[in-house]
Amino acid sequence: MSETTTSQLTKISVAPLTDEDIDDVRQVSLPDQQVKFAVTADEFLAETCETIHRHVIKRAGKTVGFFKLDTDYASQYDFCPPKALGLRMFVVDARYQGQGLGTGAVKALLEYLPVAYRDFNWVYLTVNCQNPAAKACYQKGGFTDTGELYWGGAAGPQHIMYAAIDADNKGKAQ
Image (tube, rainbow, N blue to C red; front, side, top):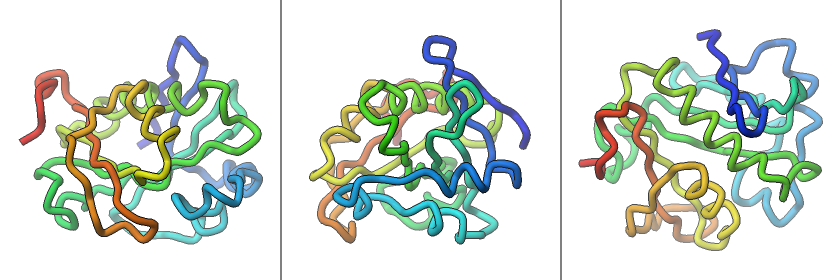
């Protein structure tokens, strides 16, 4: 997977993590109060699993964040239908928060998925109920709240959200 998709409105791109990105990813950090909702850069880089695909978020070629796509998400969570990816550990560097980069990255991700993950119909995520800014970012970027909560989160209950990957799946996921 070497595809890269850039959101034209914000010049933000998402792409698979490469060796060239590692030093820049190590510079990404979160405020202390947000770490409980995600992971540090070192934790992100340490996870190597066949079903977890690590990605970077870039603005004008500079790494400003990262996230993971989990191809085995549906087998781990009852709320997630078959043929759905999981979006995990979506992080925008503290220095770039509040500038619309998160929303732009979500939009770029939703443009990228139909190209890079053709075998999947949906992307699901959970976002902590104590993190309304992240929930708003996902909604502005194109995710829909199912109205249900996931109660297994380490930091408390989480909203379950989803977006269609394929244009044929724009209705509610089953």
